[in-house]
Amino acid sequence: MKRKNRLGLLLLALVAVCAAAFAAVRLSPDETAEEDASFSLLSLDPEDISQLSWDYGEESLTFAYDPEEGWSYPADSEFPLNPALLETMADALNDVTAYRTIEGADDLSQYGLEEPSACIRITADGTQYSLNIGDESTMGGQRYVSTGDGNVYLTDSDLLDTFSYGLYALVAEEEIPSMTDLTAFTVESAGRTLHLVYLEDSGRAYSDHYVWFLEEDGGSYTTLDTELTDSFVENITYLTWSQCVNYKATEADLAQYGLDNPAAVVTVDYVETTQVDSGLTDDDGNVIYDTQETAHTFVLEIGNYDGSYCYARLADSNMVYYIDAEVADAMLYLEADALLPDDILLLDADTVESVDVILDGETYHVEHAVEESTDDEGNTTEESVWTLDGTEIDFQPVFADLISLESSGSQDGLSPERSAEISFVFHRNTDDFQTIELTFYQYDSTSCLVGFNGETRLMTDRDAVVELVEAVNELVLD
Image 1: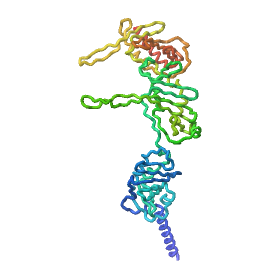
Image 2: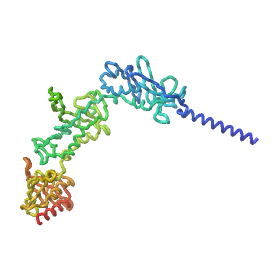
Image 3: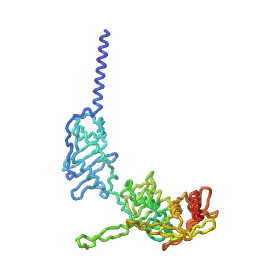
Image 4: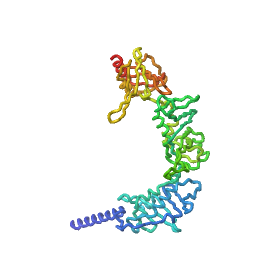
């Protein structure tokens, strides 16, 4: 009797194991797939497609194709469609390959096809086709697809990516021009105007390295740091749209976006250079081109913030976009003072004819000349020669240390409260800024206040200035 009980229990256990194994097979659709050779599940000539529809997310979209007119959005003839994406979709339907076939699939939920990730409907040459895209297979890289014939197929996962677009992802966004040769950059916001002008070799700064200036009322110009200003204007010249949010905004929409009265208006004046056919040829018959420069103006309006984005549009456009909020921050809150140079001295030695060094109440006049020498191989080199009272001195390291000094900070409204530790007056062979005065005042135990042509704004490390004083003392006392 006990043996019969044991045998019955073993049979029950065996039945349970078989049932579990059968359930596992049913729940692993990959394992039920027949090892068929791959074949073309759908092959449509893109030129034969007259309508393409798909459901993705909460959107159901339909687009039409005409061989003469191309792709269009019948729901709104004003929609600015980017046809390239529709062409990519149509091309993807030219060869949809099935790698496996699961025949007579009863439970579509196993494959994510009861509620598909995307439903694609195609009209081609008068025939209707459909593709429902389900889950990714456990093997990865492939997805389940049904066509309505009762079977389930495995195809490339890329098919879903190709159709993973909502309406606004298909917008042909307005082009932001390539703005390389700028002449001016203006920001108007909250009752203030920053008008920056780009002027090369203008003579408005003591160094030609400076090309950006703040133009103020009355025609005065303030020199700006080149790298800092370049970085600032690149917020707009390198601008990209994050997303289109409205392609035909009404007045009410613009008010909602804060674009009826923009928080900031940015105007970029730039020059576009092109090569145009002159109508002439050279002796070899090659076309001679003329350089043509055309002035353009780009205007961007910035509205309200929306999280990490900000609404923006081109002036007078009905298309509204998201841009990065950091771009808006720079336009709205950056002050001109943040663009001021922090160079202690940016001076080309070739422009210096002499320098007066004022130390401990004494003035030492150092002459400077650039001498050329040619070696036996005909190579010419230039060398700076500094002389004090007709005697050559090694002033070049002092000059190099001055050039290498770095600012440790800036603060407006500072004035020297102590006498100068050392001053340098440079006499130059230039048309502008023929005299430049650089003075260092002790500010505290670690810093010196820098005076440049009467302006005291920058600070520098006092230890570096003390080393300068010691180096000059060694030269003049030697």
